[in-house]
Length: 341
Ligand code: PHE
Image (cartoon, rainbow, N blue to C red; front, side):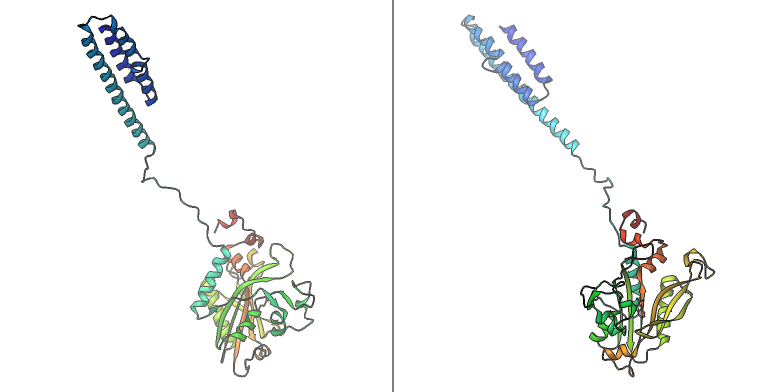
């Protein structure tokens, strides 16, 4: 019996040390110490022992039970420690790793150009104003001295909302001149950037929606010289000092005199190249002195006040600045295009 207990001791301790999980340990406990376990089986033999041997064997059996229990507890402790160790290793956080950079977008290239222009005009004391894209024909045409029957009022060119041609999508930002003159105290220095709409087929240089920037100054004693000086300054800030401009006579119903401003091609210096289509000059805007009839129509006395105005296309400016050859790229919002800026 003593040998049987010794064998059980050796076998159980070995099995316990080799076990790899709490479940396996529990199985061993049942196997060795359970009601139907191996120690119980040995103790069943007690009846065959003599009265002197019985207490000695009983004591040995108790000792064996508590040794096996102690071994199981110890192993359980080791296993849970190892488990914790492994978990800590797996969940370790290396705070020195560089991390993932969020992919940030950026402003649309055309709005970069607009921001630059706004900055320049703010620096000269201009105010930036905003106005409706759905406009009355009165403001888009009539108050700008564009009479009934003028070709630019044609249904083929303009998006009208009503049969009577009263409400439309503005075809230019010039109605902002009227809104400013009607609403603001004099003197006025403002620019009004925004969307305009014309019935144009989409191609590399046309879109039914595009952007203009209107500019206007109304004060006492304002002359064409102020217009030229201001626009020259703006152009130099955008294209660099010494950029050459030229003002060609033109006609707009709401300015008198009227002109168009060209800049000498910054690519070829005026010799003629693909950028300027061989002209040496690039047309940038229409401008002029606000027509006395327009001033008077807004309640401003043309004998006391005078002013100038200009309107320029924003897309064309951005295309020139970023060497973009197709207008459609500006509106398609393809990230492969936009990410280049
Ligand atoms: N509105 C005119 C256009 O769309 C441009 C312009 C604005 C001309 C202001 C003179 C003064 O062509």
